[in-house]
Image (cartoon, rainbow over all chains, first blue to last red; front, side, top):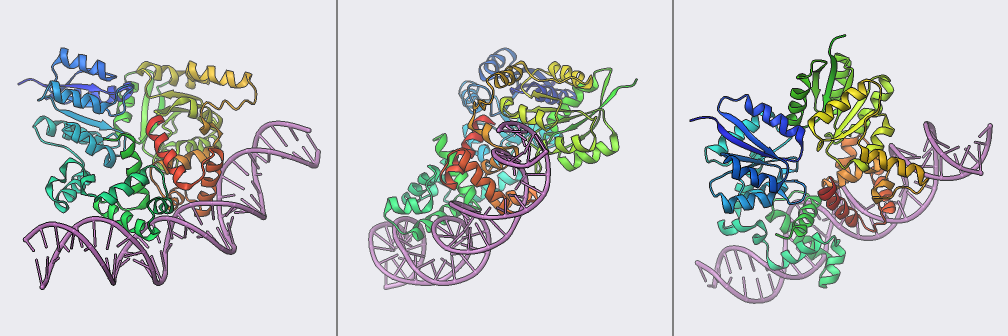
Length: 216
Length: 216
DNA sequence: GATCAGATAGGGGAAACCCCTATGCTAAAA
DNA sequence: TTTTAGCATAGGGGTTTCCCCTATCTGATC
């Protein structure tokens, strides 16, 4: 069989060029085309019939996640590999949930990308060890059905507090609003952190804010 | 004269590779080396004696602006060209003030980068039309403080800290990374809050996270 | 009836936050 | 050319949060 065809969707031409050159040096892979946004990407899929699509998450206009979702709908067997500059712990999960088959950061070494591409082409899933570990932990700890979202692990009260944290309220304000002791809210915070496998208070806040922002 | 030597300082290996491959195809240019952070960059300058340094602004640890300032001090005639993925209107001016001789976005086409490199090597300054226009406007309108973004009000150091806050780092981590006292970071935090008219620390964090998500 | 998870909350030490003050340093303004 | 102003840096001291533990009460679940 010939070289597997790759489509790159990323809005940074320099990066596209870099990826393309690296990939084209491999005997079994070839970059069939490039696009810089979601509509362009979809057109290219139609025309080129690639074997895999490499997608950046932060595209102009429509978000890369949308492209992945659409691909999942229209071309069920066409896998997407996300190559993003964003902190993986926050986006990887969302990307995979949307249907991506891999997630790798732009900070990674070049050969890691090739590994990722081949793994995804073989039908496997590629994510960094860090993410794998984190996801496995979440799976193991919570009853497996928690797969829909880690937030399912939270109790009602915890979820309420989580939302308020995401709105930027501080502990005392939350305590006030809910007519509870500050100490109680502190307890919730630590329970939430535990369940979501977050380490610091700032991590919690960051997660909460971002979750609330793209309320999915 | 032989090919002009270029040093690339960027923390994304894929992008470095891309730039390098594009540059090395030019008969008059050659990539002499790559570095992924500021200390590495400074070492490489010492060793390679490049003719120009291409710098990304968002480097791990110390920020690219600092590298440019140091270069300006230690190697007065070594020009820096900033290649950043950040919104130019906010950073270009700061970069130029710090001593950079050009600013180009990663969104630009590949050949624009070559144009920029050659222009900077000739001793000229390269910036996009958009930035030129904006700077002229600011000049004309006088003080006016082109407050296109309230973040324009922040000093370089404050902006660096602001971004780190948005990445979810806590005060002590920031202090550590920048080799500064926790007290100094606290000062920056309060200055930033004042300039952005934010009341609480959580408000600041929320703002920083959200801003980083969209405009970065 | 024992066990378990959820809602509530306290103790105590470390860390962060917040408001003020302060010192060089450089650049602009008077 | 003083003066002023903004920036980078940092300490003092009081208040609030954070963080790790322990604890009570309640309603399920086994």
